[in-house]
Amino acid sequence: MAKKAGLSKDAVNYRIMNLEKAKIIQRYITVVNLRKFNYRTHILFFEFRKFDLEAEKKIIDFLTGFPYCIWAASASGSWDIIVDVISNGTEKFDEISSNILDSLGDNLKRYEFLETVKESYYNHKYLTGDKSNGDSSKEISSEPDNTDFMILKELSQNSRIKATEISRNIGISHDRVSYRIKKMLKSKIIEQFTVLLDFSKIGYTYYYLFFKFNSLTKPTEKRIITFLKSRKEVLFFGKNAGKYNFNIDVIVENPLQLKDFINSLRSFTGDIIGSRESLLIFEQHKNDYFPQGIILDRN
Image 1 (cartoon, rainbow, N blue to C red):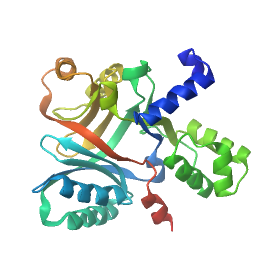
Image 2: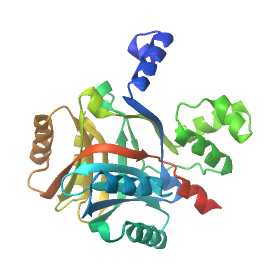
Image 3: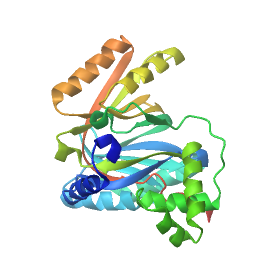
Image 4: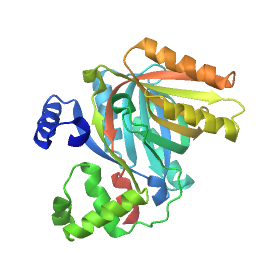
């Protein structure tokens, strides 16, 4: 990092500390390829009858504490809250969704579910210009074991945790921890290490877009993904089964930049966009790509 920035390590650490104090950097995240553990992601959209500050806090507290929730955010638009949950099968998702719906009760006005079948994470290209990404649809051969589970649980709380600290916490040597982390990176069990930022404090706005593409052939899908990889605004995209077959997370500096992105996508894809919606993301409440539910399922 210091070499890329053209600064000394001390200068980089000082700047990181200031970003943490200003709460621009909120958390350090490890993105885990949950498909390796036979989990699938489901996107849940909720609109509520009553959504004042007290009701919102109660709902958010429940959802962020839910052991199968990996991401939760408050939004403005046709939905109040978006949540990503994981499950390892149809019956498990039915149990999870029923649990959530029962807990939300009569205050829930309407909801929508999508199942994600493919996703890619883009590592803050709008800041760095880096075109790298993590594609969790790739086949990987390494099978995680109990030691990997323990290491991933530690990393899920803080991706900057030192191997020596993980070693002390789980009772294996520093060298074994380092070897296992490198192995999981190479095999794509760990997709990437990244940060959770407060985008509003650096002049960006977070939008969640979802599209229904008609006649989505394999060649067309490949072209769309290539287009998304080339755009610095794109933070994440997912291909889904359900009402909308693509969701795209974008970070923009102003509404005109958002309009330009959508118009560029429309021009690139022709007339195959059947419908679309956009949500403004106010706040991300949870980012945990190795949630407690995975541990519960193993016990």
